[in-house]
Amino acid sequence: MVLAAAATTPVGAAASSAAAAAAAAASSSGITINLNLSVSIWSLIVYAIIGMIASYVWSMRARKLPGLPTYGFVPFFGNFFGLLANRHRTWDWIADIANGPMRGKTWQMSVPNSPIIIQAAPSEQITKLVLKDHFENYLVSKRRMEWTHELFGNGIFGSNGKEWLVQRKAASNIFTLRLLRDGMTPVFVEHCMTVVKVLKETAKKGGAIDLQDVFFRFTMQSFCQIAFGEDLDCLSSPEQHPFAKSFDAVQAGVLTRVFDLFWKLKRALNVGAEAAIKKHVSIINQYASLFIAHRRDDIAQGKNREDLISHFMSWARKSEKREMTDTELRDVIINFLVAGRDTTAVALSWFWYEMSQHPNEMAKVKAEIEQLMHDHADSVPDFEVARDMTYTEAALLESLRLHPPVPAEGRVVCSVVLSLVLL
Image (tube, rainbow, N blue to C red):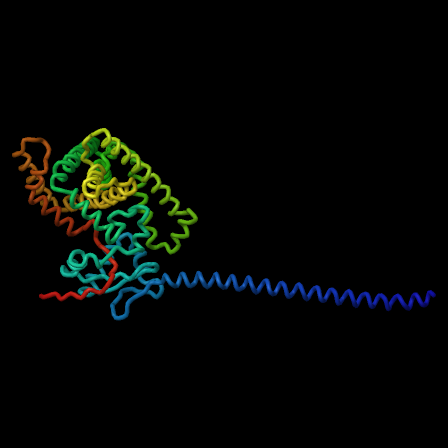
């Protein structure tokens, strides 16, 4: 029995071991199959994601048209590196190319995530064709409207077609000679006197002053009073008004989108520059709503105001038999501020720079103003006196020619326009 038991035990053990080994092998094989299947699925998902990202990035590559010359073009990146290296002097760099290797030519440049830019050779006919004769065929690009939508909204710089025409019609009816003479000029003169006071106080102390900062504060103060009927006290206070600070921050922020391939993703995640844009847009909208509410209250109380908000509300009631919404008014006025405030401040900055470099011309400007003011009863110039400053106007126009506040204008072509220019 012991022998029998001894005989059967190894056999049973062997059988059990074989069964266990088979089960283990089967189990192990099953796991391997499942793992391989799982890895294969995840690999496909990863490859698909990589492919989509690569396709998206490739779709944003810089492009160029065949047959049209280019300068410094690098495959995929286009003129990105040239623009990056010259970002502190973008327009001077483009002018150097236009007046150098591309002189007299129509040429192209491009960067990733942007349409091809055709740099037209200087021509009065081309300028007239694009900006006047066939204006409806050359529109603001959808890409640019996306970049600036938070700031411009559906205002005149953020719209095309019918929306643009309605606002252009309203502006042409509102911006009359009477409004310029009776509504705007007194505001500019009033705040100009404050600028003179600031300059005199600085001169008394023998200190230095940043004239460009003064001019930007002056134009923000003036244009906000003209537009909103509000005094932001930009010149007297050492700190910028929150509205003015956010206004500048948003303009700087939206420019970063031109070179940022992933700004939409950052906006969705609310990180980086996009988080700052969102914050400052909110501040702008809060103040705009407050200013508009003030003007609606004034109108309800029968007060006659000369600010642009009041004029636009009055125009809508008379011409379109409706009330403009707060959003419409906000867009109209913010676009007006962008058009007037920065351009005027830049023009003044360059004018006084050129005067400092040309003392003889500055002496002539000073002599003309003193002569006109000597013949004028008041101590400050008015609209009529300013119109007689012919030499001063010529000096200002020359400064604008040398340093245009808006050095370039871009449009997207809707369809090819054939135009015969008779020379």
